[in-house]
Length: 419
Image 1: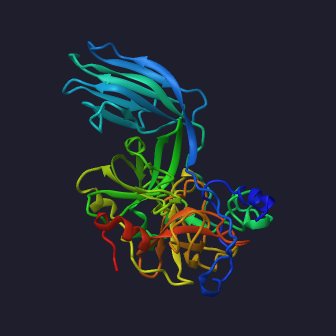
Image 2: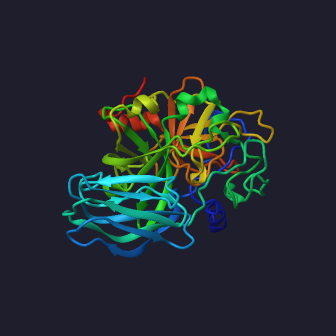
Image 3: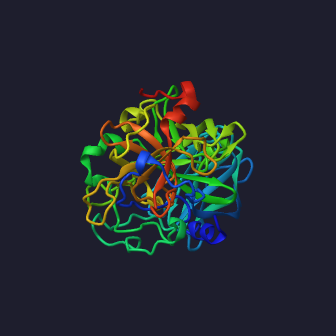
């Protein structure tokens, strides 16, 4: 493959590509010279230095406005967080509409706390204490949001900045994320998918000096509150501990207002499998973690069940996602007229660096932030794939995911998979 093709194929950044109206190829095979976009989580902000701290020990209450000019959201990073019994810290928006509480040694019990995101450029940090006596905390850095992740008022069928027709380039690369008219719709437009969409969450986490976004979902497993996403999103315990998983962040009706949702924190890293294969390891691009959530959390939000069955070619799929970190949508249509359903176009594929025969290809829109989304068989309601690649088919602008059958085999007893 020549250099020109490689450059063109790389222009579609992160995990985002569009649906197409092609029928599945013979035997479900993609062109052997396919180019797939190198995956990466969607960068939403930067970690920047910030110096503030309580006295050690503190004598009473403490309050400070943490402002990062121009930020779309702010996350505060506490170090050596340790409070006396009964004392607590709130991190709130100036108007009090958002407020999160932290106590003791923090949620993970180690004094290292990344707070949940506060929209806008200012977060109010307040220590509530009547007697003092605890160690207090330091603030060494904060997360400065650079990506506008506020709700998008555009509803299905309306034009969006991403819905223009784009000239296709050699290797299937395009300069944007959608090859034709937008095929995604607000998830609230599909009440029949309520059981499938509830377990899907927007993920916000910290890694390598940045703030990032992906998608993840509660999956049936041997541990309570097990969540799955891509390895190229979360791969370490530190990233897991920084995680804010927001459930129910979506329109309340098809074109209605957006619900703020419920945020929970990452707990323990259970298992991870790298994006690319090295010798006999990796190549499935998945991570399993637990969430620090109430024991009845799954009763409220549910869980999705993966299957060990290989999906059928042409099977209709539901691609539930948080594209661009925005409110939840579903990839549903693959044509401009919204008459052709998203579908499986290829199976048992081997995309660059993956386990041989472990991949599926499908026609459906996605974009940065969609990494880690479930690919659900519309007929059975079971999850057949974990989305992680874009632009995998030659001149098709097709997305790619790891077959859940391969993940089930690798994860073993950690997952409860349906035959």
